[in-house]
Image 1 (cartoon, rainbow, N blue to C red):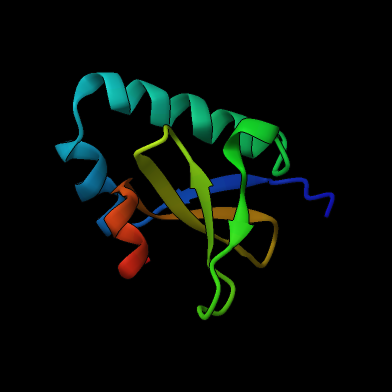
Image 2 (cartoon, one colour):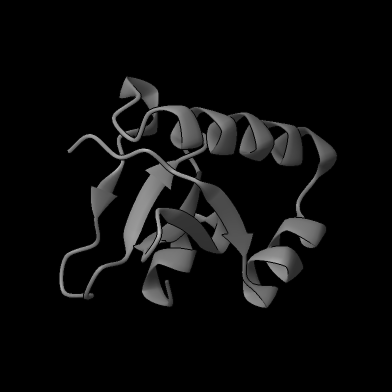
Amino acid sequence: MAVRFKGIERTDPFLQDYGKLPQEIQSRVDKAIQMLFENLRYPSLKAKKIQGVSDIWEARVTDAYRLTFEIIEGGILRLRRVGPHDILKTP
């Protein structure tokens, strides 16, 4: 899937999650978002659709941290949640 994103939207839950992360993890999240924006299939992100949830994706930040997102109309990358692997229970 070749996707050219035109912008990034951050949801309130994403911003709240992000604000609670340690600074080192925030830096890793920023890098992951940049890579995701440039190339959805960047190998270390291992981006994939979440099974059982319509149109929500997950990407790896570190071994223990994930971020969830949607690709919405107009080529916008909407960031939904970020945090430990448990966030996948409520993406």
